[in-house]
Image 1 (cartoon, rainbow, N blue to C red):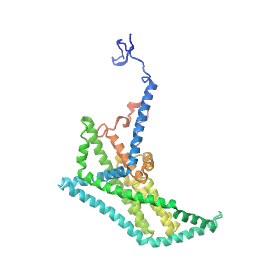
Image 2 (spheres, helix red, strand yellow; image 1 turned 90 degrees about the vertical axis):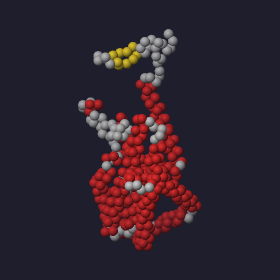
Image 3 (spheres, rainbow, N blue to C red; image 1 turned 180 degrees about the horizontal axis):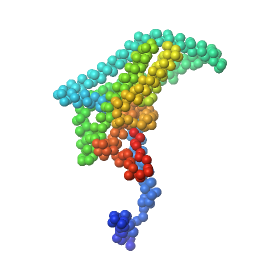
Image 4 (tube, rainbow, N blue to C red; image 1 turned 30 degrees about the horizontal axis):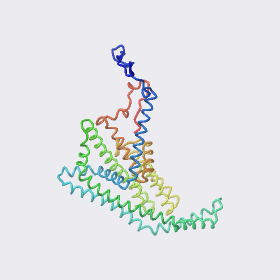
Length: 396
């Protein structure tokens, strides 16, 4: 007999006649066939997937001036997809509909920018004077502390700060900032151009990308594409509505308390609301600091209370209604996504991390059907895990 013997295979059956296993005496034994071998195979597969993912992330980081505008343009195009579809059904030419949409977006962003500039310019002198007075009050307060801090130490700290600002290191940082501004302008122009083509030719571009798929793969790709547009659009529209409610609520509180820069702070609240969890905290801290400098610690505490109240109202009542179950991610998943996004791409990565994670989860939810997740993501039933076992629920 050779190594590959032709000995007949022995088939074993259970009591119902179902085959259980096949013994092939002539089959060569393999190190990959036992439990440890299967574990090693799976570990090798995981290592390959991790290596490919790391290479893809590294490549994306090298061309962020292209990838970040591409993702932002896709998100904005998904947000305005219902408007474009409505205008197409009314017979509006694609170019006209696209230009109207872009002009609307530009008008909104321009109005926000003008509002911030106007409010800051109008109240800057008053805030500067109050900040100086607050700094003097802080110095007077430090004199009452049990720690011995004399005026010479304070002067030395101020001199060190002045030397840093006038040093070559600060100048090189300023030059790097000029380069960052140039990259920002380049990315902005590229994003607007991509957004124009996504709005105008989005359906045709998607149909072109679907050409290689056939059969079940084609149906799955269509479901994932539709789910991606729906998820991104729902996220942007829902988050924008929630952010607007937050900004208006906090603006009313700041105006009642006569806190300077109320309008810029409200706009900042609106923008930071696109960073879940962290954004609301940062906005509240900034508003409280301005109130502390300009109005004193009592008003600052009231501002903190207003921010907490508004955030609780939108988190418990408004956000579940507007965002829906399809966008509901567990807080742990959101924190991990925010951390990874911030490490990879800074503030922009933190803003984009949650919608990208929601898209990935949405694709998993429609992998095997319009309402059928991939097998490993389906919730277990008691008959599958045993009568006494608890029924698990997905984390997202």
